[in-house]
Picture 1 (cartoon, rainbow, N blue to C red):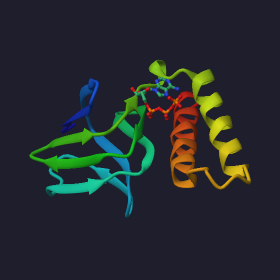
Picture 2: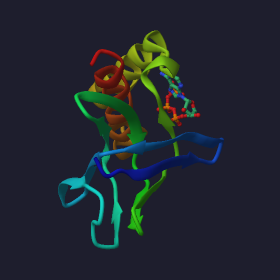
Picture 3: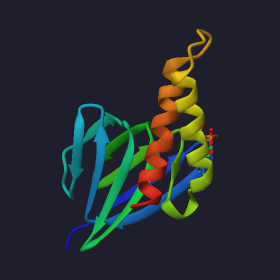
Picture 4: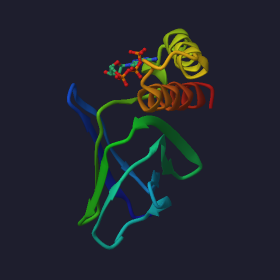
Length: 132
Ligand code: ATP
């Protein structure tokens, strides 16, 4: 089976480098599946899981936005943050989710709703990946 190299990097350093058969990511335009020999591509990513497939095995990463570049059988993901399931602190994500929900429900006008909405999406993404 042909493979491609995937690398995920954040400002804190590399998160993962692996050989996989398929990468599935959610771009802002929709879900994209990348297999070997894919045409070159650059796409901004949504806050969502990136799925890495190897045979019947699937690994997920919680990737928080960023950008995906595909060229020469290499998929590079640069994101502000990205975590493997085993590195996700579920309690912290639950607390972040509750905090964001409280802010979104608050009637005060000094709440930055866009920021709270993004924090909520990051927390939900982490909870989805850790409970997958
Ligand atoms: P919090 O409010 O809990 O800090 P956040 O969504 O604002 O969450 P980020 O700004 O996305 O956090 O991430 C800051 C750093 O903390 C990154 O290195 C990220 O990987 C890490 N991080 C955030 N939440 C978690 C978590 N639940 N488990 C493990 N690492 C996390």
